[in-house]
Image 1 (tube, rainbow, N blue to C red):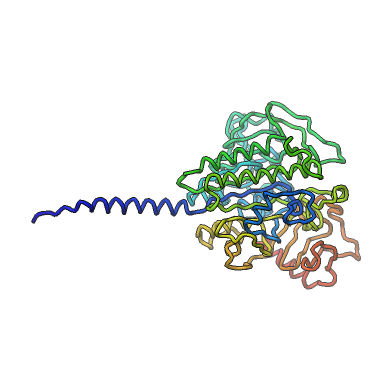
Image 2 (cartoon, rainbow, N blue to C red):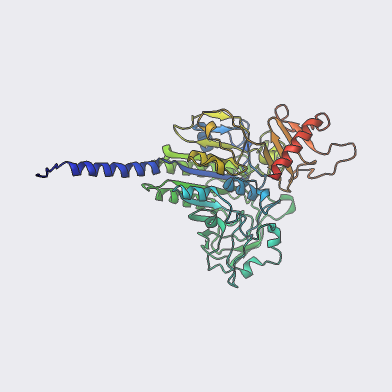
Length: 507
């Protein structure tokens, strides 16, 4: 029997093969890019679209808010830097880790242990290219001159790791460190080890020093009366070419370069962009000096706003805007003293009581806005009480991960973002102050263990007198400024919230 020849059969097979490849590639690239912009010590009231009385205009952050969803009741899981960052990346409260209060230092070992799942590692597994560019402040395991690493010990509080440790003398800066961003699931990183007011003042690219801190600085603005304000930084080791004013622009330029490199890539990307500003030192570049009525702080916020503009415009220029979900938030409230409110008639923390480090609302009630064109309706708002720990599970649900493996303190906001629900079922939100004071938020009610702020505001941790309440109970629906302690009038609510707090601490 003569075999017949069909000249177009091979073409059909080729088309089928190409379509299959295209389907695979389109499935991969249809996953949205994710950009997470984390400001440092930016208050809710600093943003002009959230605070009509703000003395600082933030047109680019305002535009981001108008193009997406704003969460009016969002909270950082801690009111200071390090633990909030831990919560964002792990979906767990940091008090479950080795750090029980305060923040890490520049030479501290890695807080995120290798066995701890992170959102970056999860996204790597999902085919994402991952990058961390900015202020890390979660510790890194520097290589020591004796050939070992300055590593953390599971179960040991970080402060014990630093006793007897002379960072500069013992570290071999010519060798790459371990842990840090690379150990937490980031393929690329360009970071400052801690805050811009902690040594060592240097950059690390992929865990290797860009320039060793062979020089030093005597510190700046160290007067006790202006501590942690203005151009304040502590004395310590510094790279010879390091510029405090240049840090924020450097990070933005690195972030822009990373985004540009992703154009035309087969895989989506995750950019975690934790800025170093407007945390001290308040060092705006010349372009922004004198642009507000709030002196260096307001000018620095203006510069932060402009960095947001540059990131968003880079996404747009590369044709990535439609398929990128952008989160913008802050790691805690602003360090804004009562005398600054009086001097400038500006409330960085809006109408909330207290400031950074406090268990009161000013310490952790922060801006949160999310933009995702065609997926999130522009100009929308949510009153859902949420924590920054919720980012991880939101990403997991977005990519169809099993609900059985969700991080224990993270609850997905995806159904709210996409307009399917107005609220979600979640455990009460836990707040944690700089000194380790706990608070719990459940519905309209908030209980703070003990008296005082637990942070920077006075009184910090006063002992109750015999006729005084032992804890603080507030109904935030009617008293958002936390003025009336209902401890004595609502004893059943006090006990209910105490029980829930202990249950959450226990699991």
